[in-house]
Structure formats: C-alpha cells, structure tokens
Image (cartoon, rainbow, N blue to C red; front, side, top):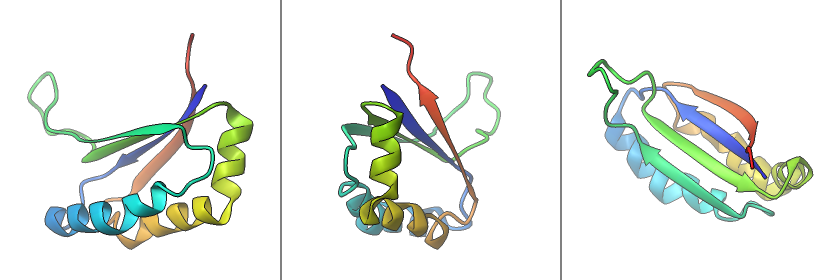
Length: 101
C-alpha cells in the first residue's frame, strides 16, 4: 500500500482556506479513481508547544504505486491536483510513501 501525503503551509486566510477546502477541493478528491480511503486533519499543536510548521495534512491511500499513478493521471486526479494552487496560499508539499507492513 502507498499513500499520497500533502502538507499544507499556513494560509493567508484560514477561514477562506477551510471553506474552499471543504466545499470545493474535497469533492474533487472524492472522485479520484483508485483512492481507497483518506485522512484529512488540521494541525493544532506540536509536542513542544512551538508553532506547527504546517497547517493541514492530507493522506490518501492507494493499493500500490501503479494505482496511485493511474488515479492521479486520470482527469479527476488531475482536477484535484490542479486545484491546489487555487486555495493553498501557504504552499503545499506533496510526497508518496510506501507503507511498511
């Protein structure tokens, strides 16, 4: 199993980010082929009390790298990926992880 992780930087306007993320972006994510499940979370704290380096995290799970690549290459996957700059004013870091068994 693999996962696509997206770390969102702190947005210029958190309320606008949250509204767009929930109402526009996540409905696009729901349409990505081969996406088995996902977790989306807002980061609220760090263990040492310092400012969290990121605002939100998304983790989308796929059967394998081929399923991830196929899903993200599909028009629905491209729509979700291309939508990120529309709301992620704090930037976004994406990477793919292979999950240890």
